[in-house]
Amino acid sequence: MTKKRRGRRVKLTEQVMDAFIQAIKLGCPNKDACGCAGISETTFYRWMEWADSKRKDAKVYQEFRERIKEAEGQATQRWLAIIEKAAQAGQWQAAAWKLERRRAMFIPKVKAEVEAKIDGRVEVKDARERVLDKLAVHAERIQKTENNQ
View 1 (cartoon, one colour):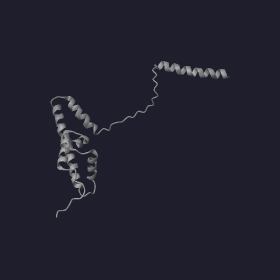
View 2: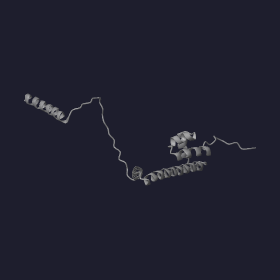
View 3: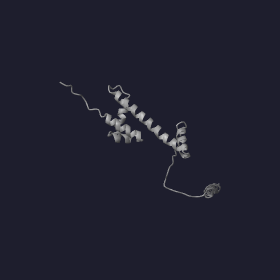
View 4: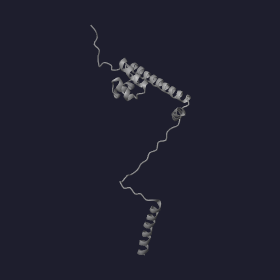
């Protein structure tokens, strides 16, 4: 008599892994690679969590994660080789692009946030008119103060 397996069948098959890895090698982000492999993003990220868990089958998910990292590294290396070849052929833009990205890894980006209140009114006046308007308001206040004394 054979033992019956308990629980669901594992979705993470060699076929799913291969489809996902192939998509990563072509440059797909994880979301699109999930679509190529026929899994949901939620499932993918759950598997990545399981790789760090104490599950009995965690090793399968760890191996999958390692294959993904390897595929990402290989793809990056291949793309940089293409850019390097273009730079060596005299296309300075390729070298500039590469340098810009490489330096960006070490130089933090400054993020500026702008907050504004919009009330629907738009006033366009030159600086001179605005100053004259303010002076007129102050002159009116002075006039009222003098009249009250």
